[in-house]
Structure formats: C-alpha cells, structure tokens
Length: 445
Picture 1 (cartoon, rainbow, N blue to C red):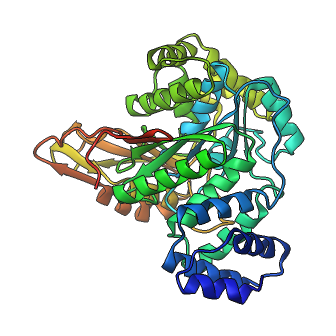
Picture 2 (picture 1 turned 135 degrees about the horizontal axis):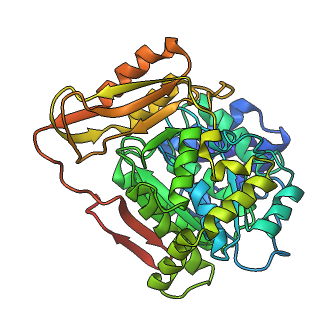
C-alpha cells in the first residue's frame, strides 16, 4: 500500500485496515517510509484517533518488528510489570526480587529517566558495577537462575517503537493515548511475559495528570494485552506527591533496600505489597488475596527477597555488598535543607516540582544523552498531612555542583505548601482495571 493513501485515509478520519497498519510499521522499520511520511501519519493519528481494534493491530505489528524473547524453556508463568513513570518510583527494583522470592519469574526491560521522572536503569547503575546492557542470552540465563532480571531494551526488540518514539518526541505527537498504549504494550508483548501488572500513574508528577486520561490508558492497555493472550491488570495510582521518601538514583536504591528489610516508608511498601500480591495470584502461586499477601510479607520478613536482590545484583556484575551496607553507594558531597516557612500542616508536596528539583541538582536529564549525577537527589522529611514547625526541614537536597543549588532550592521551596489544617486522606491506589471489569476506589470522572 502507498504511504500517501494510508496517510490520507487517517487524515479523513477513516479506520485503518490491518494491512495498512502493518505496511506502515514495516515501512518505518525498513526505512521505506521517510520520516516526513511517518510523522504525517502520527499527527493524523493524534488528531483523528484510533479505535481499539486499530490500536491492537498497531501494537502487534510493532511487537513483531524485531526479535521477541522466548522464555518457554523457563518453567512457570512469567509475570511482567510496567509503570508509566513518576517521581520517586523505584517500585520495579523492589518488586522484581520480591516476586521472584515468591516463585514468580519476572522479566523486565526498563528505561532511563527523562524530564522530571526518574529511570530504573539510572538507579540500578548507581550500584557499583551493575550492568543493564545484557545480551538476550545473558538475560534469559539470569532469569533461569535468579527468577528476575532488569535490563535495558536491546536494539533488536521493537525497533519500530524506537523509531516512532524518536519521531513523536520532536513532532508534538507524544500525547496520544493509542500511540502511548501501543508503545508500552508492544515492548511488553516482545518481552516474553505471559501475564502483566501495570501501574498507571495519575496526578501532578505523572504524564497522565487527569484521572479520566489515566483510566482510559489503563483500559486501553488491558484490552490490548487481553486480546493478545497476555493476562493484564492495571492499577491507577496517585502521583501528586513523591512516592516514598527518596528521589534520585543512589538514594532510591538505599530506600529499596529499606523496603526489603521491612523498614521502608509505608506508602511505598503498601503499594509494592499490593502489586506483588497480584503477581503472585497471576502466577498461580496463591488463589486468595490474603494468602498472596501473606506470602509476599513473609518473603520480606524472612530475608528471602533481600537474598534474591543480592543474587540479581551479583549476576549482573554489581557489588552485592550494598544490600548489607548501603553506605557504599555513591554519596553526594553536600546537603542543604529546605525548611518550613511557617508552622502548620503540609498540604501538598508537588511531585512535578520535586522531580524538577532533582533534575536541577543533576539527578535527572532534560534531554536524551545528558549525563546523570548518580549521587545527587532528595530525601523527603515531611509528607502531605504531616505537622510542621517553622524552620523544620521538609526536603534534604543532596548535590555535588554548587552552581546547581540556587535553582534547585527555588523549585523545592515552591513545591511545599503549608496550611492551617491537615488535608483529607487520599488513597494511593485509585482504581483497578482487569479483564473482568474495573473497581474504582475513589470517584473518577
């Protein structure tokens, strides 16, 4: 099919055929479609949309554009996990060894931080020697031995997605629900999982700031996964404030170790236990919610999950002694406290501004290719709802470059809002979408 005919059809609001979508994806992959043609179709999709069937076909074509991981030789159900990204979101680093300690195989290809959100790979690379660029053979070998492995996406996995994402990034076509869903799910289909748990973030620090958009994205991805034979569930979780009490790279690894030691922040721990419990159920290791949660909590209290993290780090070339001595992780040379201007209650702690503060300190990147300071970051001393006294620390900034501090302090100061009354409690988990329907725990539009 001619590129111009496919572009014209979508421009005019028509649903594309499977043949047209496969022609587009093949053309992007082999270079027979020029960038300007692919960009034109991407913009037409943004403006005219795609129905669920089109989105499913696009996802499958992108998944088939490169190599697919075959994990059939590894026994058991392979349960993947994906988060749409947020601030302080180190869930995957804890969840993978925790679920593996419960007998679940967890294959995970992760990404780097961009903008105000952190990246799992950057955090893992703050562990001395830790390797994320592994061959598929190494990936499957570690999965077989440890039960979990977290790596970067290889060049041969969904090459169409890589090319399309690069175009979307520079053509104002990022914000399209079908394109986002297809990008995420194509990688998950190629990853080798047989079930999937999604964490769709919603709020100030998320890419989906409106609850209605988060629910639509969750529904779309569950529909795609289910249609492709991948049992998929999605939780919609709040990202108005940072998750946990650490934002950065090495500081978040230290917090991951705290969670697996049973001393982590309650919000982070509770979310991880919930997601891990669903993975245990999807993996057939338990049949009741209470039994799954008990198994997960036992893996923490017994030290089995910490042992699994230690084993994964060692197999991926890292210094596993950090699990027992987090003080060996990279540490910044300077700290600065951002304090409360008055007494009262912390009404909100803007996750977006806290994420931008971390980037200003050097912990993140504004554009691809930027270097990252693995020791820079933020410790959160006060969470929304906490009482504060004037002069009391709210955030603790860790930095090396003194030239970065001024801008970071300005952003951090704007992030914290103090009022006279404690804000109402809001649940972290807002909703659950699965192949049998959905449950909303708060009122969503």
